[in-house]
Length: 133
Image 1: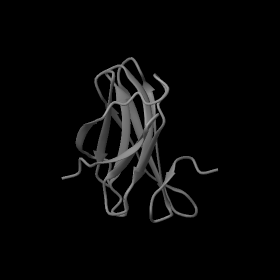
Image 2: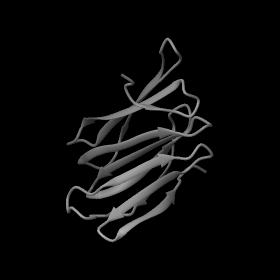
Image 3: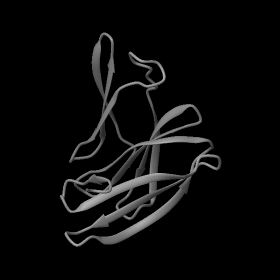
Image 4: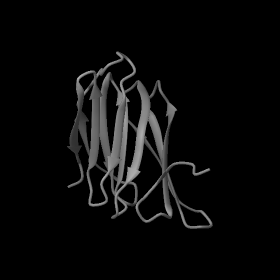
């Protein structure tokens, strides 16, 4: 079992989770190699409460992408390959065909950026988000 999202280099695994919903704290963990070596675990804070870490991924340059739901909004948070925050952007909030539990598909492009598929009763559309400089 792989404990996270595998990056395009096929040796890096990125995971994230909530430390404390009430304080808005979450972490990102990166491991690499066939015999996994811990690269880093970093802790961050957003305005509380944090509801979900919905997605983690990395592009071919090792830049990290994390989708978070907090403060009743959806955000893409971007981090460099060392885990330093470099940007954040609000994403479209979508209730889809099942209010409260929408279907969403995310994919980080190897060249960079997060492709976001939003599905509804009438079809789907794709949006590209990026917050790396």
